[in-house]
Image (cartoon, rainbow, N blue to C red; front, side, top):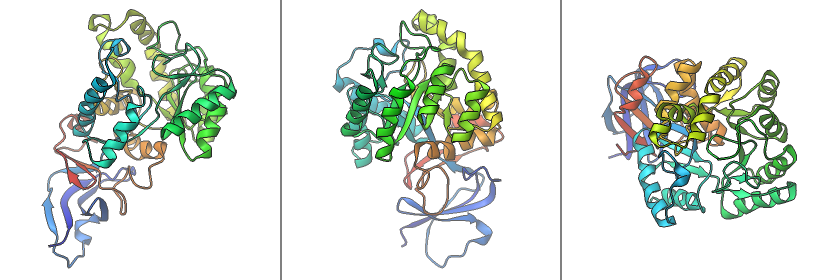
Length: 394
């Protein structure tokens, strides 16, 4: 019997943004897709294992560009004081939540004590179950800046350069720098610039020298411009965008990862949910501007990748379907939102050669859905089954 499996009879949304294919097929060998197309064009004399998915819809697994796997999505995640062992155990549970809810790959943008790096390696080795992921280690921030409680504080270009090198030495796949203040850190404001253009350029140069991508927490306009001019690959949150920086991002091909869910869950749960009042105040003050900025960026052609910021208050691990819905409610077509959550995220993360679309030669990470998400996005909240590297996990 062949070790190849034929999946047939489904509607295929391949992640490229092209028109879905009715009565499609996939042939998977080991972990990879070896053939894909219309069932009417299938020619094979091999004896294949067959899985009939008639009436179902198949799409790529979701790729979440912004996660904090070490944070618990409680009212005050940074108020949780646990040992490294306890954080690790909780994180392994969170990994499964992402995978079972359809996220087959993600990027972690700020862990605790490098636990994220060990978890990444454990998933890759098959020791624990979860999506594969890239990890940043510690975010690089100015002294007392946003994220300082779990980050690597550094001041001046030379020290920021060293901080980036430390993360790469530890095994980080991506370098994250903090361009502005944020909602979650007490005593800083989302709009205020923090690391300077020169400081961020030093970190970005170190990452790019070894072929690694960079990302920045950036909410205020001036800080976003500093990061874009410094050569950043993706702007996370992007709350206050103006026409100038939008044009800069389009010209440079800079991605934005909106993380609309992060602000949305804070506003919805409020201080009644145990979220600190300064966090709620800041989230409420930026929500409308945030949505308007993402709408303007989308309409101007800025590249968008899906990310949730899971681990922030009430922003559960596995919340990617919420973010996809929020992107559509904000401005995007359902197809564009699905592309942002698959191909767009894979491109943003630098993994598009192997992930993000269902094409020959790529890894077989896909979802089986009972309904077409282009007609009903809620089907993403009740996934029929998840396949990771060719194996059914749920």
